[in-house]
Amino acid sequence: MIKEFKEFISRGNVIDLAVGVIIGGAFTSIVKSLVDYLINPLIGLFIGGINFSDWVFKVGSATFKFGSFINAVINFLIIAFIVFLLVKAVNKFLIRKKKEDTPVIAPEVQLLEEIRDLLQNQKK
Image (cartoon, rainbow, N blue to C red):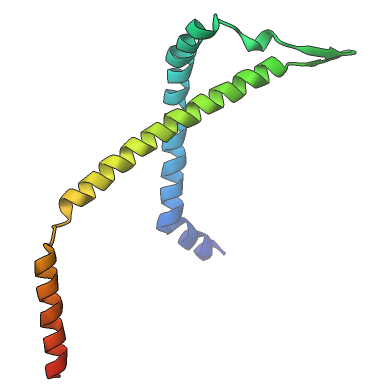
């Protein structure tokens, strides 16, 4: 069982996943501070500084803080949108880099190569 566990841990996917989780945790704090300290105050300018966390609903002795839930949903949507923009920018950069690395073959050259291959196959 120890041998199997060692093989499982030494697989690249598990190590890559661990690195991704660690970097994701660090990235979350960066995005959260961006949302809390830059984006939320900006949104507050437009909606008059409304703080939903004060909104509560009471039934008997139970208190439902649905305003805090609304804040959490808004923060999630903002964070998800920022992550979307970052991923889109990274993908655009990577695709551009791939296109620059890939040599462009003129259609005439490609056609000549196909003719050459067909002639070689006929000789065989």
